[in-house]
Length: 159
Length: 311
Image (cartoon, rainbow over all chains, first blue to last red; front, side):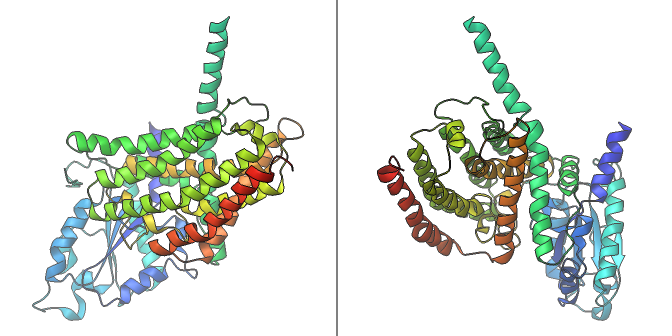
C-alpha cells in the first residue's frame, strides 16, 4: 500500500496538467504562461501540459482581477476540475486586484470565490516564476487525498 | 483429440491477446511510442521535451483522480465506450504477426481492419453520449474525417491483398515486397495522420479550439483508458505498416526487434509531419483525401487487380 501511495505521489508531482482561465486579465500574464511552455522555458520537461478541458486538469491557473461577469464562471470551472486539485493565481491582479482596486466592475480578489494554493505575484510574473509556482502546486496536489474530508474538495458532473 | 486442439488454440489466442503481442507487450510499447512522438516534436521545436516515464506517470496520475459516478443508463453507456476502445485496440495488436510463423487464420486482415476502426467509432459515440456541445462538434468532425480517410485506407489495403491474392496477414508479411506494395504502403502512411489525430488532420480533438473534442467531459480513470486506447491504436496502426514493410528472416529474436525499430521510424516520420504542419479545416482535409490520396489508392488498386498477377 505504501508503495502505491508513493507511486501515486510521484506520478501526480511529475504530471501537472493545467487549465488556464482568464478572468478579465490584460493578456500580459496569459502571454507569460504560454511563454513558460515555449522552447526557451519548456515546462514540458516537468510533465506540464496545457489541457483544453477543465475535466482533464489538475491545476487551475487563473489570471486577471475577477470581473463580475467572470466570478460565476470561475466557480463553475473550479467545480469541474476533478479532485485532487490546486489553484494558482498568476500575477498581482487575482491576488490583490492590483491597479483596478475599488473598480465597480470587479468582484475580486480571487480568494473570495475559490481557495487559492499558490500566488505568483508580478505584473506580469516572469515565466521562471510561473514554472516555480506550477512545481509548488504540483507538490501540493501530490500530497492531497482524492476524497478529502473536511477540505471541501468536490467534483460535479452533469447527470 | 479435437478438444485438445481447440483448447490449445484458445490458450494460444488468449496468450496472444494478453501477453505477446497483446496487452503485456503492447501497453509499454504504446507508452514508448507516445513518449517518442512527444519527444520528437519537442526536439524539432528545439525543446528538451518530456522525460521517458512521462506517459506512465500520466496514466498513473489519471487512474488516481476522482471519478464521480454518473447517474442512470446514459452514464453507464458513457463509461462503456473507453473500455470497448481499449479492448478492440488491444485485440488489433494481438492479431499482428510480430513473431514469424505465429499462426493467424484466413481473413484475419479483415478482422484487424474492423478492430482498428472501433476506437474511432467509440470516440464518435462517446462524444455524442456525453452531450457536451464541444464533444458533439468533435464527434461530427471525427466521423466526417473517418469516412474520408477510410476510403483511401481500405482501397490501399485491398490493393495490397489483391496483389498477393490473400487476406491473411501472415501471408502478406512473408511475401516479398513488390513496387505495388510500396504504393499501397505510401497511401496507408498518408492515412495514419488522420487515423491517429495528428497534425495536419488533428481537427477532431482540436485542443483549445473546441476544448478537448469528443473527450471534453471525460475525466480521471476513464480519460486514462482513452489515452491507453490511443496509445494502443498507435501500436496497431504503425505495426500494420511495419508488418507489410519488414521482411521476416534470420533467427527468431530478430523479427520482433526489427518490428519495434520499424514502428519507431514510422512514428518519427509522423511526428516530423505533425511538427511541420498546421491544422487543416474540415473541408480542406476531406478534399485532400478525396482528391490526392484517393486517386493514389485507386491507381494502386487498379494496377494490383490488372497487372499484379504478372509481376
